[in-house]
Image (cartoon, rainbow, N blue to C red):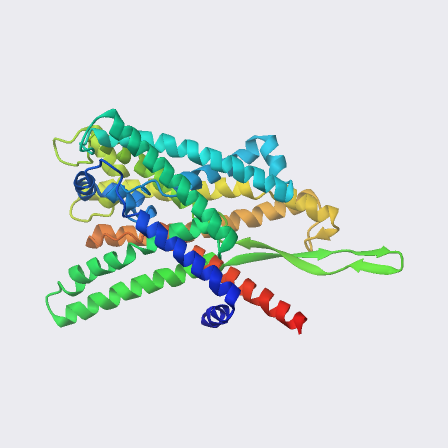
Length: 444
């Protein structure tokens, strides 16, 4: 990895691409600290202190949500629009045709994604402003302040979408993913500082401090290593191509493989599951209703506690621990969406038909339906392993947070995103270095 980065920095073209990415990320971080005009930032900060369930939104936006900056919506509307369009390609034949239409079709789908992103940005901005207006968010509660805020949030989301596309075209890696990465990474130093102050500096003696530091470091490093293995792991299905005689030449006969990633659905199932569990709490917070477990708490407030991640795995008493049932629902949702999303994006029947047309077959498996059944069986096994791996990566931080009170922003979801984006970006840098090397070799 270090060799790849060193070789990349030696090439002027790649250096300029990396510099462009750096400048764009600086712009993102500056925008995350510019508040929406007319907003009382102290109110929103206090709301986040009283309601930890909103932390997931703040992590994805790099802290700009709690500051109510012009980038408060960040790139979440674009990500949501991309997922919706990807799912609709199965239901709408026109979109499915565009997806198979090569570069032109991809451009058209990207255009639809942009339009849908703007629509979602407006809807989210209006809902956000109306919801927080009851919490005395604005200095002046007139309609002018609300209109300005909606326009600012929508413009901020549109600008980040455009900036992400510029990073993809003129920089290195996927721009949207890199913006999401920098938002998550920006919160990590403050979280590490909080862990140090609470468990290392706040330890009673030097022995406890060293032990706490070793445990924290071991958990963080272990999580990163586990997620790297999860992201890089794949099951390779061998494929053999039959020999064909064309004139006097014999073609085919080579062997290949179909790579099935262990984490086939990526971080999408975790995002879906987290969003569903946190949605009731977020909507209730707009109305000023907070999760509660006391004797005076209503049934709805107890339901909100069940959905709130910060109330899971608390071992103080059975009255608090029983709300860990929400964690079991969360795990079930992750596994369900892992199967659902993979079934939408990976079609064993289509793969089997394409192999048959090209004269390919899996050794020991007959072409046609037997191949489809074989691919489906292997895929189901791989999905289950990947879903279990994602579940472990997401549950470990939740358990530590509930048992030890170690509230940090870099949860399993965040770490999966960080590791995935870093790996893909490094692979693209490596490919650019190789292409540059071959061009130089041919030029000589």
